[in-house]
Length: 107
Image 1 (cartoon, rainbow, N blue to C red):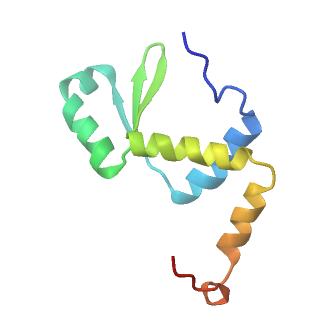
Image 2: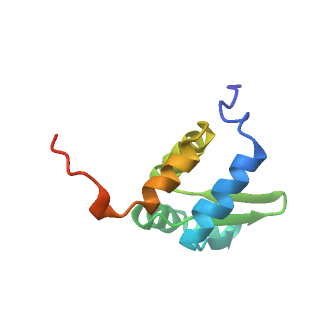
């Protein structure tokens, strides 16, 4: 069994991402149960991949989430960036900067 490298991320950081990053974007999940998922698996997978839909699958033992690899990688990257001390403030400063105050740069 492989140890999860993100297990050490604090609950506070996870809560910040959940409530301040994702909720602001008004993410709406598709809810289904395991029986319906089995009947329409490829439709749900296409929806997750093509439209970045997040599917919440309700089961007797609890819920499971299906999301695209792109969404998953983005979530991990957000958690990583917010775990770097001072990064949250730098990102917020960048978001609050007027684009006219930025310097054009050619690569």
